[in-house]
Image (cartoon, rainbow over all chains, first blue to last red; front, top):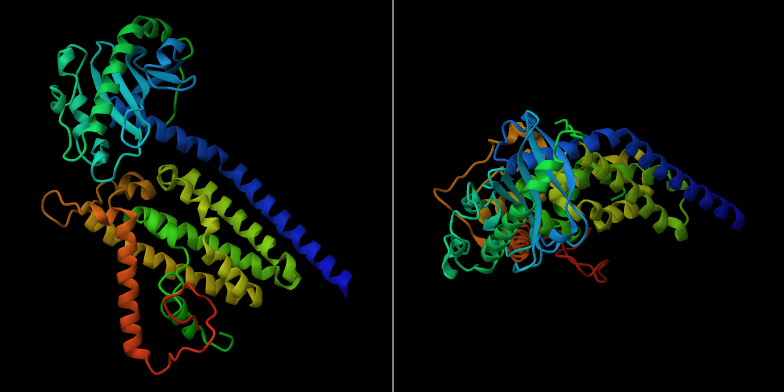
Length: 217
Length: 233
């Protein structure tokens, strides 16, 4: 009786384990291609948003470059990261730079900053953040159009003193009840522009279309 | 529940023994992701699918489950189905998987799944277990939708926002703004508002239920579970 139950249980456990492994392994194989395509499409859409060209991201190809170590600290990136250069008709059009602010209210605010090669911002998007709901989250493009106030700005437009929120004498709006969040974003965008100014020529040279990476939508 | 007809069963799963309103199971996903209707729909459907899968497999193995190995085997099955669901969502609705984040794999920790597997599926035929999963899962899904709709409406002033996460580009224009102007009631988006809302829904449910069924529901001594809002029958 005892042995019978033990054998039966062992059989059940084996069956369950085999079933679980088969289910997961086969699904993983079946969906692998589709999953990476979806991921690439989502990333392409994201890059397209930062280029302010979300209707025709297919007109662009992207080259990925590692970011030089000396810029990592200013960009708030802990470890090696990549930036992307968007090419239109094979010509470098804009740089898309990841940037992280650590001076927000709720931890890291991850940004993606698009800057065209005349050094003007194409658009900024928030990748992730943990700011207060209803107050700080107005930095999201879905919550308000505040983030679009960076469009077409550059290091000289406004003047350096204008690169701050209004409470600090700058030109960017703060939110009622939340000044820390927009202040953090404004500072980080300005810092990213400075990195761009320093790295612009290197990035232009490195984006010569030798290993251009086509991302299919 | 042994001699119940299917109709009685449906009534139980969707109303009398509702997994959330009466048994308070699955509260954490309910409160965490139902800030919009789209999120609620995504996680609700995923939970329903996992529940159906785990109930079927648990029922198939029911003759081989000894008391000692019941829990690990059922957990293994549930975890496998959750992983499967996660893979599918990631492949076909990648933005939704990003939005739901950790709450997608955390379906495995929804006690409702283990409850149905342990208390129903392993004691019944595959057919009845499937029916039970569909009923109880739909009960959960429909409450998710109600809570999601109310919280989105009051918290963000919209309905059907973010539906493109699930349905793709055709859903981009589905957003409705029933209120004029910019309307937000902050607490509705926050977990506290979710808790309050659930409390009100439970109260309303009990009010209606007690009006209709007062004579039947005489509490028996020795409750089966402590953390419930009514008697689990």
